[in-house]
Length: 475
Ligand code: ATP
Ligand code: MG
Ligand code: MG
Ligand code: MG
Image (cartoon, rainbow, N blue to C red; front, side):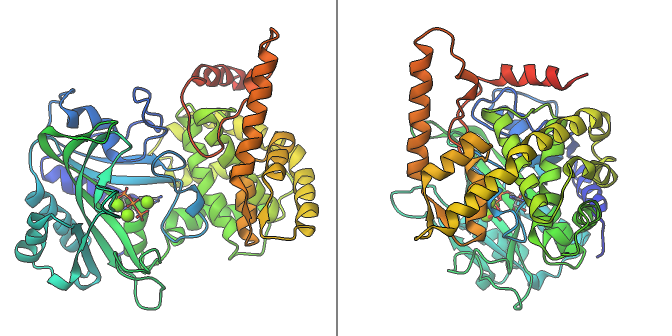
């Protein structure tokens, strides 16, 4: 069944609305009241307290299309972008939720009905996984739905020590609501490399996970104990782009309508002929996360959420540079983004002046040091005798030329090299020490320059600084 992404979104929400689910708007990408979370990474985030029984709503069933960013924290897909067919930093998660209302049987039934009757996926291309010990879910798939047993795969914990570390035990973060889940996969065909879930080739892109149906039963505490939730509930998430790919008859998410149009815009703006270059996919991905993050109030900064945004912008700029962009190009993709997504998300249009200004300024600032930094890196690499880039060089690129460590790692990976992360961390630590020493002498000029670990989010102490930057970017 051929459907545009917008049609898929509407079909999903109306299907669940017809099953008495309240259609709830997507929440912000910034989970303001949840210090355990970097960015909204799943549809259930805005309902966390409802699952925990702390918050009550006047509905017990809800459905959403939630904007999500996975570029840091527990679910981090930044490094996958450009390498897999199915990962974005920004994506939309379609979800249905039961707050102590229905449980496994209806949740599985609804998912199957939507996939096979509403959007009419061929049943023989679907397979499912369940948590190893979840006989109830296995039985429902096998006997109620009628999925052949050989296409129901039990997935266990990674090891006895890593209890509840399984693809079929979903956790929002290190703490919070969690539970066993059942996932639905689509087989894109033999011609694509990859194996079924649980097999050694599962990371390939032949069998793509489309929908995760979580049976929320526990609240995980910081010490790892699992407290039962007051009411067993349901939380599901299906990537809009992944289901759209199937319905549009393409394999990769990057071939769906939204991405084809963003990529076409990038080709035109940058003026490249290299249409297959994976940098185009990275840029198309990154304009979505950056546009939406700024629309939701995140501003580039040297810490926390703002630093993640800065890193994504700089990665996009570097990929544009690789394709031959000479002037600031990234912000010029915003009209194309609005053409694709502005109807569903009007804030993109209303925030456009701020988003444009921020992206342009960031790009112009980074462009000043990018060429020089790349030159230094190239020179050093030509003399490199092993396949590991020294941490000191990664630090120098970061400290002097504004290269976030993951950007250098991205370049390294393209050349089949890696970076010495331990040495980089040591250099960072030494810089922190120096900053601390300096602060013992009165004014701490280095305070704003301390940038904590390039990959892990460390806290929100600088949110106030972010707010000041918002002011700065305003007229
Ligand atoms: P994968 O194993 O492919 O990385 P996941 O198991 O991490 O996916 P979930 O946390 O179960 O994903 O999220 C629910 C659904 O959201 C997935 O089944 C998928 O359809 C979609 N999804 C997850 N991560 C991404 C992403 N980075 N980009 C696009 N869609 C995603
Ligand atoms: Mg994942
Ligand atoms: Mg998975
Ligand atoms: Mg999953």
